[in-house]
Amino acid sequence: MARLAAAPATLTTLICLVACSSDPQTDRDAAPQSPSANVSPTPENSETGSPSPEAPARVPRPDVDAVRPATAMAAVQHLAGDVGPRPGTSPAFRRAAAWVERRLSALGWEVRRQTFHTPEGVSWGVPVPAGRSVNLVATRGDVRPGKPWLAVGAHLDTVPQAPGAEDNASGVGVLLAVAEAVADARTRLPLVLVAFGSEEPRGPGDDDHHFGSRAFVSELGAAERRTLRGMVSLDRVGVGAVLPVSSAGEPDALRAQLLAAASRADVPVDAQTDNRASDHWSFARAGLPGVRLGSTPYAGYHSAADVPGVVDRDQLERTARTVVAWLGGQ
Ligand SMILES: [Zn+2]
Image (cartoon, rainbow, N blue to C red):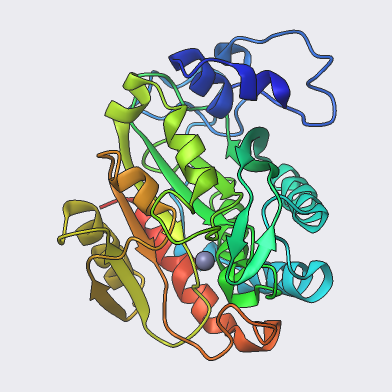
């Protein structure tokens, strides 16, 4: 972990973040591998290179009907019902991260940890200490420097007083449901999934939150920034029957893509603008395309009442189907 954190913010750093084969239990002892040494469960994407000769002739496109809402709901139950409040620098957060890492690995994703510093502060009225937090960065070994890629992320941390079922075990649950639904499919571009640490505020300013996603963006090299075609933040996606789809500023092309994907998936939407309250803002403020799904208001927000019962399985399913439709094509 320290190895990654100490690495310079170069192209090589991101290649290792998103493309190096990684077994979190053993990679400390493993010999360095080149990205091309990775074994991918899917053939090379046509936009990233030639199909490998041993690849199956047909790998299906992502299918919205492959979404299993039970996968998302199980994550909500575990993270909010069993683990509970998990500020980004807390032992509970580390337990939650270990669980999500195991789930992603079990679904066939290569997971790398990106550690970063989070300062002390006051999180929703409660003092929290400085410390290390972690992003879990999952790929299938098909991301190539200089080639187009997509990202889907959800923050795993909570404010200190909330078990965080809706905010944001719902987003992490949908992340896992998407990871499962596309595990054996060929997304239209290589995909990076990220469970972000330390999203929640530790002060009032725009630099007092979103620490994990800002660390991720800061370590992207020029080629990665140029080729990122879209990042979707899943944040509070399990309340209501209509899915909020928000750009960070004015309506933009990425938001239009998500609205079209929701339409293909038969998901009703509320198209919004000017939402800067989630990890997509770390991308947008750096000039990269980012949108947010979710944000419907609810009574238990940032409180002890944010328990699994507030999360609606059908809304998790709507959100996951929208993401899978976006990953499948235009
Ligand atoms: Zn949130």
